[in-house]
Image (cartoon, rainbow, N blue to C red; front, side):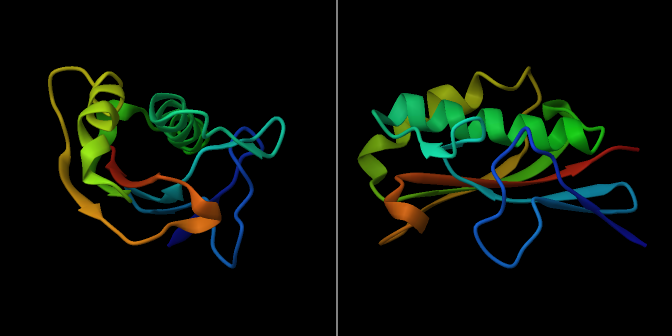
Length: 126
């Protein structure tokens, strides 16, 4: 059985998808970009600010489903410039303790709304 997870503490979907879907003990979170849910404005002043907003959006969706960063087992980072990987990776890594999820990072030619980074995750809670 699946359950749709939605929270006003994260940006509303900009298309026909849910913020997250819980299936059993798994939570599948759609890709998050740097939209500030309070203002509905993009936070893309610099890559650090942008990445932090993405991670905060993920955090809010995780919490809405009763999960935390420690429950993430897989993540995917999409970025438009691999030269920004180090900065993105530093912010991303600061949200985890010692056990990091599996991950891939993919450079793409474009992302929604002209952002520079988008991250999606899968979480599992026994």
